Amino acid sequence: MRLQVKMNSCASPPSSDQMKKYNFDEIVDRTGTDCIKYDALPQIFGSADVLPLWVADTDFRTPDFIMEAIRKRMEHEILGYTFRGDAFYDSIMKWLRNRHGWDIEREWIIFSPGVVSALTAAVQSLTVRGEKVVVQPPVYFPFYETVRGSGRRMVENPLRLSGNRYSFDIEDLESKLDPGTRMLLLCNPHNPGGMVWKQHELEALETICLKHSLIVVSDEIHSDLLFSGNRHIPWGMLSAESRMNSIVCMAPSKTFNVAGLATSFAIIPNPEMRKKIEKLMGTLHIQTGNIAGKVALEAAYTSGEDWLRQLMEYVEGNYRYLEEFFDTHLPKVKVMRPEATYLVWLNFREYGMKDKQLTRFLVEKGRVGLNNGARFGTGGDGMQRINIGCPRSVLAEGLNRIKAAFDRYENSR
Ligand SMILES: Cc1ncc(COP(=O)(O)O)c(C=O)c1O
View 1 (tube, rainbow, N blue to C red):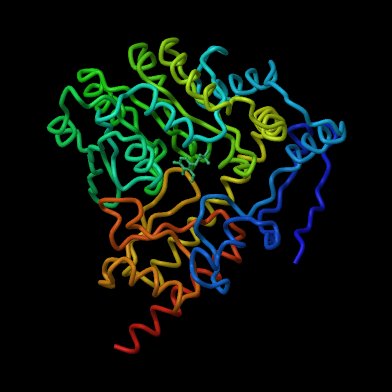
View 2: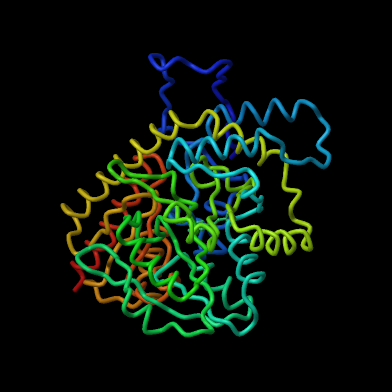
């Protein structure tokens, strides 16, 4: 089936009293586009007959103002080497000022094709083989590959589960640090738990990091996707000292559903650190980037506020739907309430299934594809991550499939 690409055009920005209403209920057929989420189902789950609620992109249309900007640029019909000019940097600086109250300088920003590339570049250029890097599991699993694949040693500082929320285990962290520990990889907002780390939590972590001269590499890719009542605090805003010993990685990819355009950026106020990372990026010759990604970022950060507000209203609605569904129909599943992101961390431990067994059960009996919790490392056992960045009807179908599978399971015992 072909993907429909009828887009609404938006010639001039609407005034605030006639803001455009976006339709997130619309089902857009993504099959046949080589998208990982749908077209790689047989490779990932062993069957195409699975409802995909896994990899972290959304099923919502990339917004019209981004598509229009890309189309306009494509009309030129020469797609040679390009660079990022004022519009790229200005749009990032304005976006960060408006959204987080963070004033940054243009020269602090470096391009990276992906956030994970930037994390790895930071590990490889600011630490040496054999040095230690702290990660805080359960966490976005490429963090592990970034550390181990770079020949660095990993120190695990597991998050502590209290109530239904994770927090930092500061005592554990301090007890594990030694002079060979050079860096900490932070995930804020947290994937998979959805925490937006609070000022006091960040400050407690900051105290230890400063005391032990740990470089903090903060993955803030989900920082635009805030649930109401939450404020994101970029690591670089904590203090001048922390700013000079940190790297903050961000991107428009999750927010505006443009992950396929491989465009992100890192904010590195410390010139020596920046120079080292830029040198590695330059050696790999990956600093060119791509035209569509640059244009998309500029359009997103210039015109994206209203769309994003509507997106998050919809995602929060999806979350309320999910929470009520589990409360009503499957109360044994414990849901971690996210403060950001369209990813929700589900605890199936009461069913007593081991990880592979649980994933197999969900795929074979429920025909749903979630992310296996164990992949996120220590603490992920018996957990699954569900992606609610989809039309509510799709989410409802997925939840009903899970319920039907567990109903049959309970009835057969
Ligand atoms: C916390 C986090 N960091 C990084 C990424 C991936 O970023 P990129 O595709 O820019 O490497 C993801 C994607 O799910 C993520 O959740």
